[in-house]
Length: 171
Image 1 (spheres, one colour):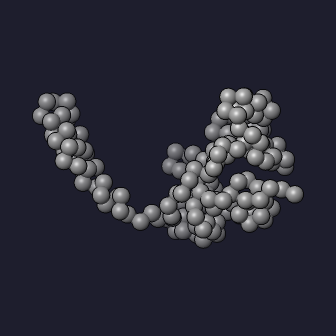
Image 2 (cartoon, helix red, strand yellow; image 1 turned 180 degrees about the vertical axis):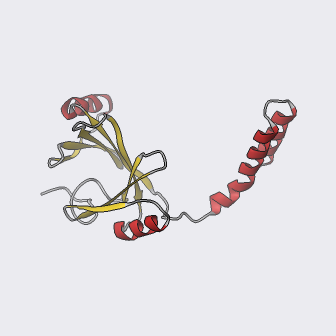
């Protein structure tokens, strides 16, 4: 922290930053320990569970990513026309755009001992519009961040499959 303070003051003294920038920097440094020790409102993200994209041609995109990164098929989402590729302890979802713009669809964070209904209630109490829904017998939770990026929360064991946690392969 001392090095950060010295660097900030030195930049100010050399005229590299404004007084306002100095004050913002000092505030950020002062808040860092408080933020590091603050209890998260919902829970600690234990993983980036998966990232899903929407594309014009699922087959073509799947071949592209498999060719580049060697990701085997984890499971197919036949009802949605998508496919999940295994990426180690995470997965990468590729789904048809179906008329929407292509690109990032959502990112999913894995939480330990996740309960979609309880977390949905907590998010709504914080003023976040959260949608909890069922995909088969798996409860899923989605919301958008302040920039309209879609975020999903699931248990760390979720893998786009079936069962209450979505951690089993479809039959």
